[in-house]
Image: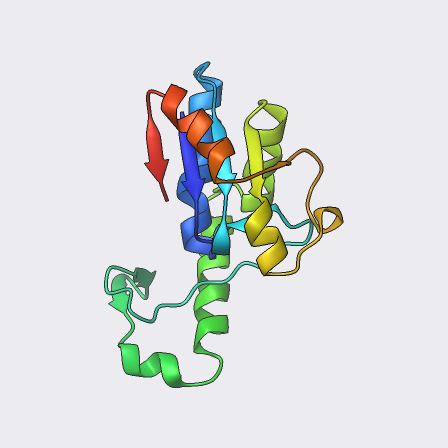
Length: 155
């Protein structure tokens, strides 16, 4: 299985790591290719946030209801931070593993992680900024993997 990881917000970090760790636990060989805004998910120090802006499906449980935040509210300073805090509290309250925990589990399970060299250069990251384990590669590296995979996901 190959997964292209292109997004690095808190809510978008869960799908690739949950799918990768689940597949690895089922004995599937998994490769994750981190590019553009997904690359920061490999940073040693994660500071993940969410933004309700433009996310009409984001309905947070609050006061016994499911509340949707109007887009106009996202213009108010601190709304993204508050939404992120609410989501992190909900994740903790429900006993959902953190992205840091899922990432460590993926490394432990032998998930192959490839950091996009072009994105590393573009956004001026250094390999030393990243966790131990990811290898460097580019589009050709991913294409090699994808052409051999039975499952290819773009997240």
